[in-house]
Every structure is written in structure tokens, then in C-alpha cells.
Image 1: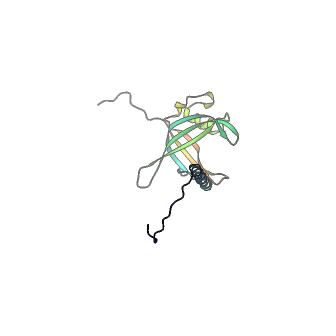
Image 2: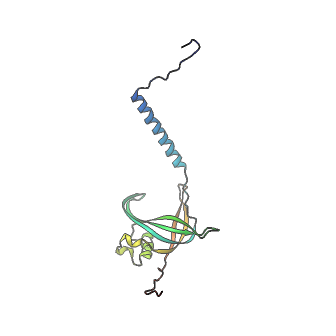
Image 3: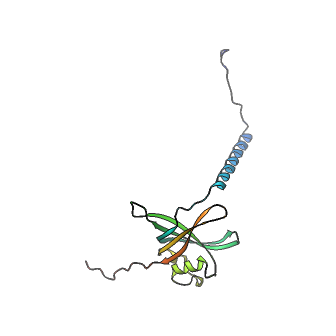
Length: 169
């Protein structure tokens, strides 16, 4: 080594301190992420309007925490056909939450009963909610938290196309 060269060395960081620094950095990153999420305003990907849809999945969830306590719910996923200029349509997945209720005005009763073709309060199999063509009307509802949510406000079950009993070729 000549007199004109300066050698810089990085001091060795003990493993425990290095691990603590990594943990603090991850915590800082998590806190920053949570702050960004808190600032994010949710907007639905399905505009308000009337659409044709098909229910393509249904799941029953028990003991879900809500603002009113614990509740059970049915989550129905619809494939919604949205008209698009210069195209036929765009498929949008839309999930509607149905919280268990015996109130006849609740979506759980009137919408699920409409899909099933009988009173949902009498019981049903979750699989009976899958594959049902329907016409829906969606509206947006802005909540106090600043988020906008889409919800089904009108639902009509559509008849399945009939299949001929015999085909002549």
C-alpha cells in the first residue's frame, strides 16, 4: 500500500444487531404499508347499472366478525357481463355478501330465495346457488369511511334455455 491510498473498511456488525436492524426495517416497512392502505379509497370495478350475470361460486362462512358482532354469511360470486364499446362484453367477477337473517326484507332472504326458487329460510344446499343465470341491478353506496361499495339492489332469476329432448340430424 502506498501513502496515497486510503483503505475504507466496513465495520463488522454483530449478528444480533444486524438481525434487529432487519426486524426494525421490516416493521417500518409494514407500518408504512399500513399507512398507505389506510389512505387508499376503495372503488368498485363494476359501474352502477343493469346487467346479465351467472352465479359461479357460493361459500358459507360461519362466525364472521362484523360491526354488530359475529354472524354467518353466504358469499356468492357472480360473473357479470358488462357491455363494452367495440366489443361484445367484458366479464367482471363480483362478490355479494349475504349475512344470515330471517328478515324477509334482507338480501339474505329475498335475493337468495329468488335465486333458489323457494324460501331460503327453509334451508338450502350451497351448491344450489351455483350456475344460475340472472339479471341484476347494481348501485354504488358511499360509506362514512370514504369507500364506495357496489351492491345488488335488484335480482331476477332468468330461465335456463330449454334443451330439445330429441335432435334430428
